[in-house]
Image 1 (cartoon, rainbow, N blue to C red):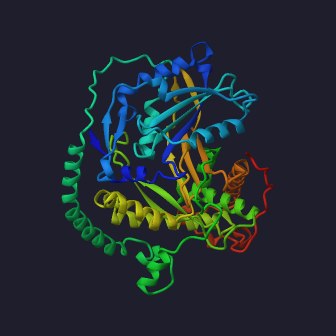
Image 2: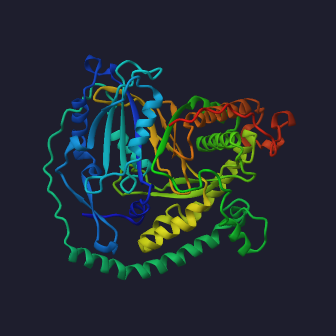
Image 3: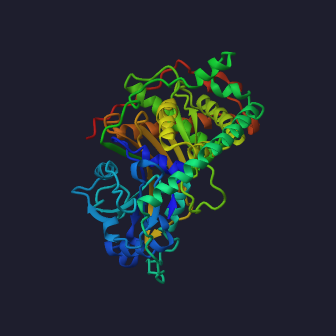
Length: 515
């Protein structure tokens, strides 16, 4: 029996209303590499079952403390009904891309059953009219509650449930004898809660003193000083702090989410990212990704006549896992709030501003610690952690933008080759759009998940992502490169810079509403 960490427990508490806190992945498979060129449902079941013993999260279920007096516990239950968790469905005729996205969005809109281990998988057949897929291709949608896994652990999970060999058909390994955990009694849980409560106050005091000292010393480490992070020209510390806590401009994504989701996926070649970096070598793949998302948001909102004059901000998850990415430690993730600079039309301007903001955020987090939020959640009462997250942290952001590095070699399931893998993440109340990237075998697969009322035309948003990335490619190709070591956009010729703070982008054609 193991207790959830403060961050793990927070993800459970944030699940209320229409806000469901599970993350998922959508893989598409080519069965032509399997024996006889096909994969049956029972082959996928056997492949999963062969890996249950090596993946503890597949066997754990929750035990909650009465009255919510303490965080829940994981207990191990080896009696897993694999056919309850792995399900088999098919798209209706004609089986096209839009139908697959709608089906995935519907499944993603349903909460997980908390009386069972918190995961489900769906084998989806009938992908008969999706351009570019071989005949007989199928999809696998796998969702897991965020309280059990973070981004990097999720990547290791993907590696674990696949093989690098097409010849690996999931033959069961030697069975490991496992014993079912005895669920704790109510008195035992009360005693544990009381013991934890006694130690919470001194731990909180010690963390407060340590954090204050780190923040006080952060100014010297951050380019431009600590005040530059607060994005205010005022000299008063109070007014600077007030500026930092000011909400971003309201958009259609700032309301509470409905019960319905939309999902859309685009693939961007990593070779193109590397070409862009040759022109702007100080930029990271994540900088380029954020620049692309910022440009797509600008195009989308401008087409609706809703583009704010000031920038939107985004939540960027930041992992603090050590070298062992597969360590069974629960969520090891913090976050940074960064501007997307949607007020800038020119992509190179936007890229340079995002790059500077990322450098400041990284320097600040290195000083105060990327795990600061996790340590606070560990010592604060769960209700206080939830209140601070809902009322203080999330309102500072407009959307969620995340990027996870995945495997760069082809993977196989029951002999079928994984063609693409898209991360399907969470739409929050007040952050009704989540754009997450996952790199796999030469492609950055970008998935947008949103409330259907806020993004009724996901295919059009996909067009905006493609157009934004193409625009960034063209702008980077025009950058001269005699000395790329420290390029600054302000030094470029005016004909290339196309200064644009008030410039209008060419409106993209609206797509019809998708229901």
